[in-house]
Length: 76
Image 1 (cartoon, rainbow, N blue to C red):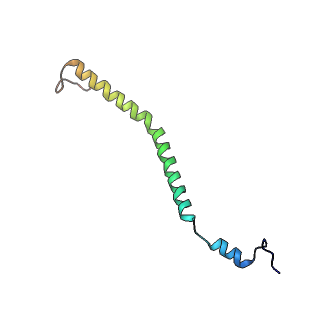
Image 2: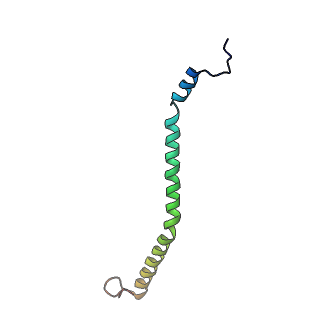
Image 3: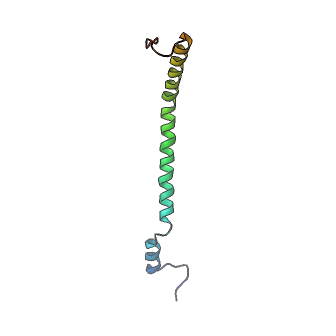
């Protein structure tokens, strides 16, 4: 007499051999790693990007305050 809650070797082998559902889980793990990498990169590069935009804005304002667009900016 077999008890329904007692696993036998055939059931255990089938359970561990069953790979259905793994693909979706693997894709979710890959996507989560990519999202974490993008967020980490954003936090790393936000400040240098903002500093570059500020510097560019300052140079543009300096050029426009002098009243000339080409030829009168000395690079300083």
